[in-house]
Length: 526
Image (cartoon, rainbow, N blue to C red; front, top):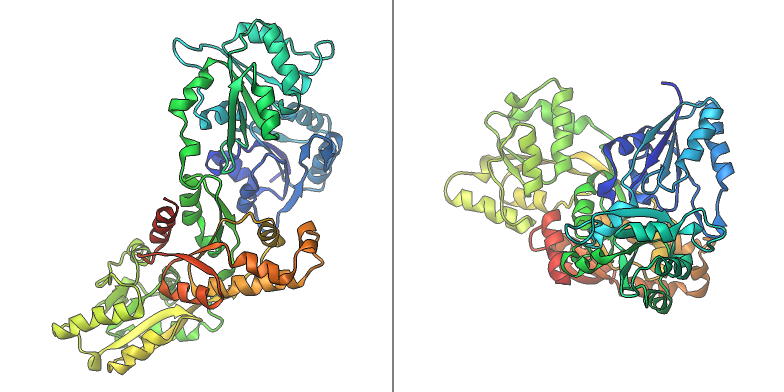
């Protein structure tokens, strides 16, 4: 495929507002040039081999000049790379996308434009402010605040625009708010006209400040309200009192650490973001196939030797089915075997493969599983002395279930179906900890706890990190800060491990699933 540039709109920041086409462009890119206003979460969709270059700009702080960004795009494509130029909002609404497209055209570079949801449209709605409302506002205009400082210098006739429309939206205008307000008042707008500024709109850290043309400048200065923010001027601002919805969500402003394996974190992250929380991805483990696959392959070849099959995780199901496929076997090989799954997600994964579990205990602990099985023994539905159990599990799975089944008289093959490997923690996690910006730690297994602690130890030892806060705090103080952060665990085994390390355990899910953990988190905060 011929190398080209995708001028891509990333939307206002809510990950769910990224378009499908933009996501595809990120996924397929060799190089991603991303702006300050493009949510970093979108880089999760990129290929691991993709080159990611931050080219963000804010007032008086440019990593790259506009000319340098344009040159960089041309150079990368000429080197045979496909480039995703990721820009906040829509690339052609005050995003300088037109300039970049013209530069590419001049250089003979192929390009494609992917529109994004503009912050001028989305951010007011996330603050509960419609741009138009029947009988209240039937027109609106969008302008840039960068050119509002001086009437003699500005190319925007704010006075005429403000007089002609019911709602005025100003982008990039916080720094020049006094001048903008003065010119809107000159247009004849009443000093009582409502005004709202929405900062980091559609993200977990969204903030809104409201006032009127008469007092908004004073309020913004008193609150030290910083960019980036969208300014909305007009009577529609008053509807916020009734229509505000996003800032009422339960996890707004909460930075929640997610330590799940990257490939399995999506559903949990979506739950957090659906309640306006910010999921801080810090995978501490990754799932890989067993180093020695022969034991599982051998067990699959000899399935007729087993009376019972217990799956304790979704991964156990996945790797078992892969082994079944590799032996050119299908579901007929499971005929006559009673199957138990631990947890609804594991049962759902099994069902997707065409198998319905015979047993699903309510209590996912080892004690609960054994009590569940003993009940069938009492009903003469199972004889442990004549039973053989196959347990496809992780390399680090606790041996207690295997040991207890053997004590009951059963034969047990606890075979390694997959393994876990630790993942290096990013320095960003330590930076968030040092700046006291983590509100909740979450763990879904004992191994995520252990690997998080060991990963953090390595970060703390490396004081060569370029973190200003690291020079002002001792290692002991860092650990103390960590132990003050509330911690949530998926079940009692994980909770016990968290307490071993002295973490501030506040939440233990009653149902040992991601849904149960999330429900417990919401209950804790409300």
